[in-house]
Image (cartoon, rainbow, N blue to C red; front, top):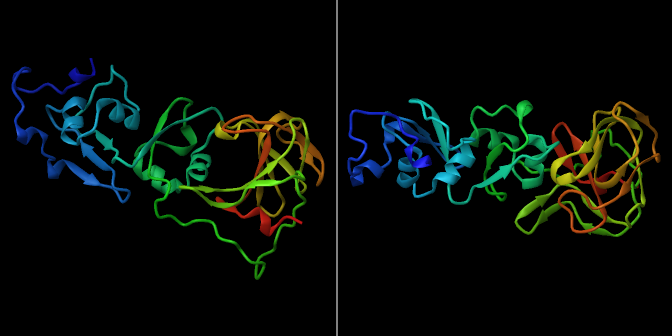
Length: 272
């Protein structure tokens, strides 16, 4: 049982817990900028006791710290205790920390702060991450003007009705355009480039990412079928896939993003 994941002490296992046992020990914790508590395990601690102390439950602690029922706590280990507004995200195939940050409307730095020791380049399918609220303060993308910037002019990858624009959408930030289409409609490369990713990408479903000569990237998500291979050079207007509804999608459409130095840009500033 999880309740018995405990560091042995000289106290008897059946000893009653006093109110002091559930009071946060100031010397053993710190609070991150995102208001999640990082607790340092001390002698005699168990997940059950830590959960009681912070008015949460063992399942939340296990998910936030990638622990199992067989995990042992070691003295000095840091345990992230999410606040009531934090959420737990389970990593899907093809997802990166940057993808998750974009989808959830938070920054990579915020995710890293809540998940100490998790390396962005070593994520595992099924691994869990603690995420801050999607309306947390962060540096959000802006509508960049052409002054002083060599703008990438893009062709529309799909002609159709825009069903969701770039920007705030209810409580989350939407980092691209959703363009409605029929299943099987051709998706075109918005500009010439090299295929740096093709395959399943978590909530994006089947997706393609193109690297363009000026350093920008374009992403095409929710495809039914991918028609290009990684490393392939494609030309502007070339068919790279077909419209679908794979991943986190409510109907056939294209999710289209532009990325520059780790920041999503408003596609409407670049499409013609």
